[in-house]
Length: 209
Image 1 (cartoon, one colour):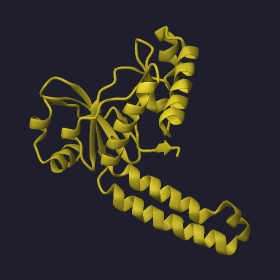
Image 2 (cartoon, one colour; image 1 turned 60 degrees about the vertical axis):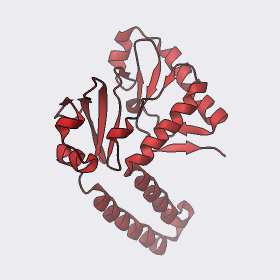
Image 3 (tube, one colour; image 1 turned 90 degrees about the vertical axis):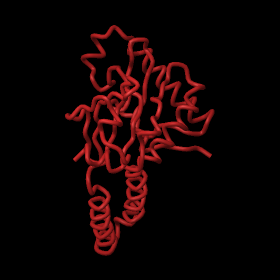
């Protein structure tokens, strides 16, 4: 299904798009999964693919949430303080953005420009020729996820220095350029051998006017 989705979206056979495409995903979540691949010119890339019919499933879930929010406000008046309907609207907008990988690609490029002001903060390059609404191809990052504390501890990298670098990177991009990665959990952050911090997954971005 992943191969078929890529070929339909990019209008070319896998054999033309990639010299190698790993069948087993290296990462998977509720909306999309990521495969390792190698381009014909020898570049290692990460290929993110939306799950089939995910937009229909999300629309169905949002309708259910909207009904739940309306019932909560009607039968439990105290819940209005938490604004459940507005909460559902926020979730809906966020998921709509996350299901259009062209927006994520644009966000990655925007953050890459902003990251120029932050020392040791890196963003993977987008492969625009192999990206579309349902497929996003980026530079492959050979690094340790910050969520893998055991590998990180055995790597010899200074974790305090990584934390400082990450904090400064966040503040630099947010305060100097008005844009920041808004989903900075350990699974979306990596440390390479040189001590640079890499961010991935740009479906949720924050902006400061």
